[in-house]
Image 1 (cartoon, one colour):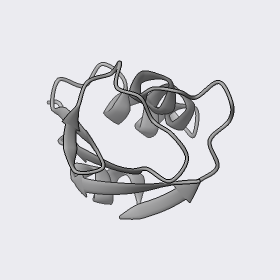
Image 2 (image 1 turned 90 degrees about the vertical axis):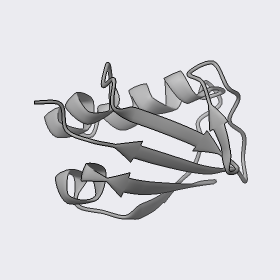
Image 3 (image 1 turned 180 degrees about the horizontal axis):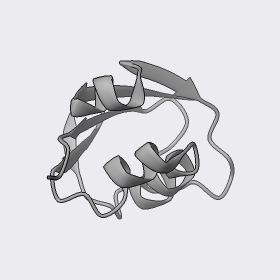
Image 4 (image 1 turned 180 degrees about the vertical axis):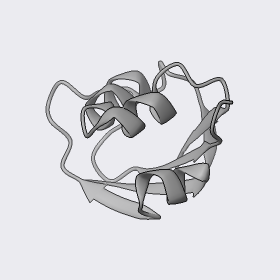
Length: 83
């Protein structure tokens, strides 16, 4: 299970400030996690994939798309809408 915190425009756009999800075995990095979350709907996809105004931290450390994620991690997503 990982805890995901949402900040910026993500809170209003996605309708939540946090979530907890069970990681599937194939979700081992930030990029894969964002892809899985993006399947929740069009707005999720728009805000999480290819958004230059999205920053990610894993356990309070800035992360890249290739950064590892594992059970017990806290992931923060800070995103703003692209005009």
